[in-house]
Structure formats: structure tokens, C-alpha cells
Image 1 (cartoon, rainbow, N blue to C red):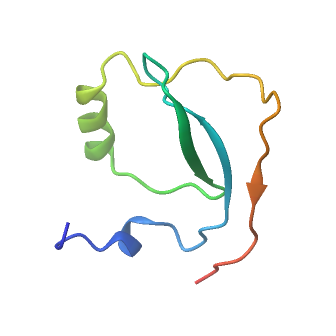
Image 2: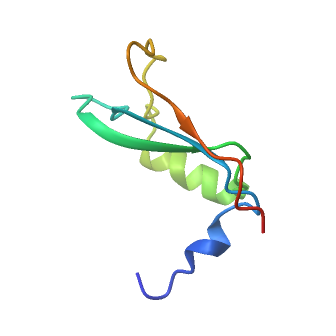
Length: 79
């Protein structure tokens, strides 16, 4: 999207963990490459309410066992 500056949506620290998993809604499609930031991003109350209106039942399932999956991490990219 040409009018969106992605860097403005991220926290100053983009240190992350990455792993292969699946979607969090049915049919739980596998092969999803997840990136989880170690520092939380900020969202306004209005943005959260809008999100909740789009997903009134939520969008997550229970935490799944790690199994044989590997988790990769980094400790850089401080701006």
C-alpha cells in the first residue's frame, strides 16, 4: 500500500522470534511463518475496538506444543 509507512507501525525495537506454525483460525492451515516481536506494539483504544468488532469471537486457539519445531531469534535492530 503506497500510503502506509510500515516503519511507523513498529516499535523502536524490532527484535523478534520466528517459527513455522499454522493459522489461528479454522482450518488451522500449516506452513505459516510467524514473526513475534519481543517488545509490544502500541494500539489505540479505538483501533482495538475496531479489531474486536471484526473478530467478535477472537482469532486465537489454545497454545500448541512446540513438538519438533525450532524457534529462531535475533537481538539487533535497535533504532
